[in-house]
Length: 103
Image (cartoon, rainbow, N blue to C red):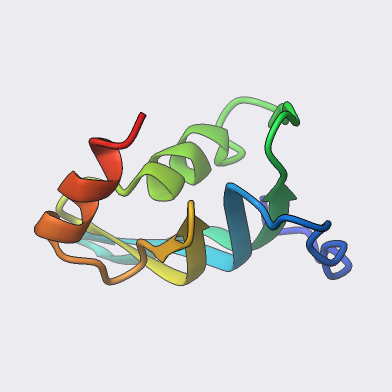
């Protein structure tokens, strides 16, 4: 998912439940750093459905894991991933736990 994308549309009235702005994911491996995801921006409003489509290995699952704050210990997200008003990039476990507990 490294293609250059135009900026996402502005938030509709009432805001979004998910905002990804210039999301990137970097994995640290024994052989160095791997940039798995670069520059993903998307917005999902309440009631909308979004599908991530792409070939195997394009980063769909990595984007979803980053958006949920569930990346593996050797991965680091950059950019912004705002879920229900909370930026989860750099959020601590307490913040993430509180967000996951919302229904």
